[in-house]
Image 1 (cartoon, rainbow, N blue to C red):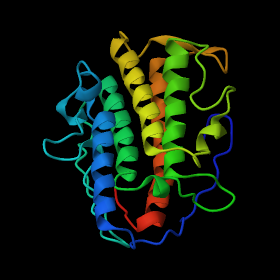
Image 2 (image 1 turned 90 degrees about the horizontal axis):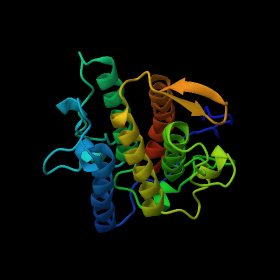
Image 3 (image 1 turned 135 degrees about the vertical axis):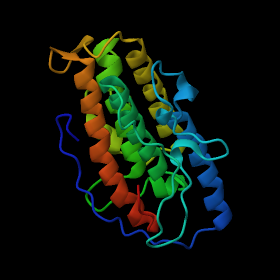
Image 4 (image 1 turned 120 degrees about the horizontal axis):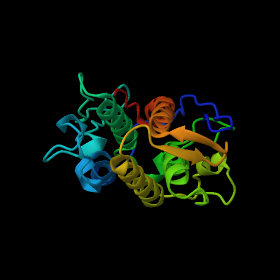
Length: 245
């Protein structure tokens, strides 16, 4: 994590693929799809003015941002319905689309897993897990959108102090808790960006006591997602062998 603290190392979690009741897996796959739609479909949290159709990650009859994850066991490949960012978009449209693409990717990496699997840690002594990543990104969204542009004194999501490591402790967390917090922060972030006149909008980063632009914030949060989605790749493969995207 690039917010002033070390990110716990991540390796293959070594989870045993298979061996779980298929009905249970199917139930959670549907649940994850619903979560993905809320995070990945721009229309679900308010139409983003000026955004191209490529930003809409949901497909009619599909599972939205979470995609359709084929549970093929070891070396299975994730199948998803995400639409990539525009190839010739303007700067703001492109930044917005890439950010939503990475949000959708994190939702997809969690699709079809039980709470227990989402809490599975990478390797001792790391506390890194897929659910921990979702919790952490809720914290990142709040720290860089809400606290910069709206409320410098807004508390962190998971800690009373500015402790980004607290989010990774997901041992007692649930899918509903983590995704609920994340979705709420994503909705706030999108609203703030949508209401801004331009990327030149400035806000104060309270941790630095320095002004930053909306452009800088969007790029920073995009980099956070890119980094942690790489962690999510390894974590998901270690749980059930699913790879891809």
